[in-house]
Image (cartoon, rainbow, N blue to C red; front, side, top):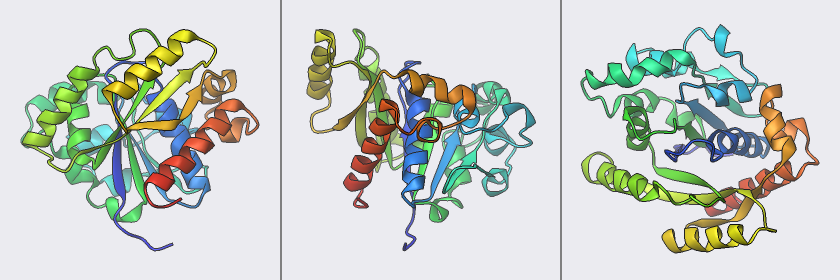
Length: 260
């Protein structure tokens, strides 16, 4: 497979519990299994995508905190996962203090972009699992990315806060990263039996014309169990609906990126 510069994608929504980490972990695993090299960059202080990939957060020697704040080399901080073609730049709770420390830093919005520059040629895709806020860490992610992916939960307040997210994105484009594009919007926790779900889908499609993936991620018990075993769902239970949904989504994602 010819190696070009990797594409860097922020998985972002300032609302918590919408499936950001689930998407980061399972999309990486699914495209890794298809032979593409993926780096999962965990920049959420909760470190859930780190543990969701089977790493022990407590035994990590260096993390994205050291990369952002202490100038540690991103290349030296990478950990290989046990899953095909997936590496991780891990996070742990020390990242919680990074927001405050970044405030005082020079070039505070571009620390992550600078750090990741040496990694971009080594991967097909770099996915940044962002914290559920629009603070300085998320700003760093958007400045470092080619595009952003927005998971949206199919629930009553789905669009709440999204206009704030999009105004942040416009600001980032204007001030720091003119090339930032919308990668796509992924509907999560989908239940086709509910009228509300269809209303939310219609609303989201109106808000993001032409940007909503046709793949949707259902509510699925196996999908919510898998992280506690440190496994992407396709390794935990390949026959589950959650696994099929992420494999279908990975195929759509790759096709849209000219790799399908």
